[in-house]
Length: 296
Image 1 (cartoon, rainbow, N blue to C red):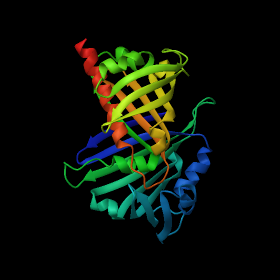
Image 2: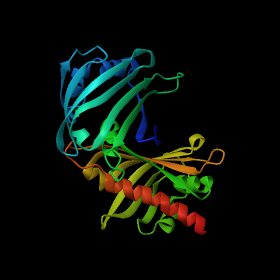
Image 3: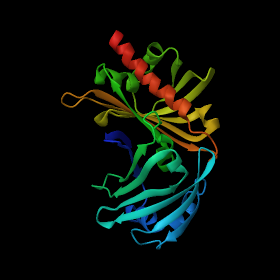
Image 4: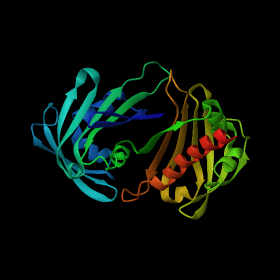
């Protein structure tokens, strides 16, 4: 599961994501709160070194220096840690480093949420609080993706939430009609159009090149969520794993219907680019579907 949102309070803005974790909630919390020296072992492609600058590894208010690679570039960060044991929350406030050349302020907040019942997964909520240098600056989506290995967006939809959900879950054969500039063909490889676990073959154009994509669909009607996991195709030549998740959220009160779009991926090498081009195509497909349903 991946949920995301973006909010603004004055000049302070936030990006958020929620990540399911299968390992021990206590061990994850320990690593992100008082065992930062072990992060390079756990995420060696991204984080190269963490050192204490003032204080120690375990005390709130301590200051640490990080060296990491993002978008193929090595950067450094000096941060002050705040540890909230009662809520299993850890905040890292940037004091110096490359990120403050791009944003006036930035704070990373992790909160570990143990599972609420036996069938659920533990969760980690990741929040980036930031203030832009200029209003025209882009939000730090690449830094959020660095933290959670996913890209996320929320798209407002004007058409029926049920119709959008039906098309992206059980009517994939109609997607080429709705988004003909992007999608050229969809065919069933195993199963059928309507059953969770079925496998389909897609043909699409990205960056002027025709590619193919074999995926396995998972349909969650209770949450109006659809996941497409890559099994084969051009995208797996560029990324080790790749999953697209759509979730349609009907409007509450006078709000709008929205579609949450999540792209989960794993790079072959940390220097590889983020799959922004694929993400943009997926977002545009949802917009095309919405426009198609309005027109029809």
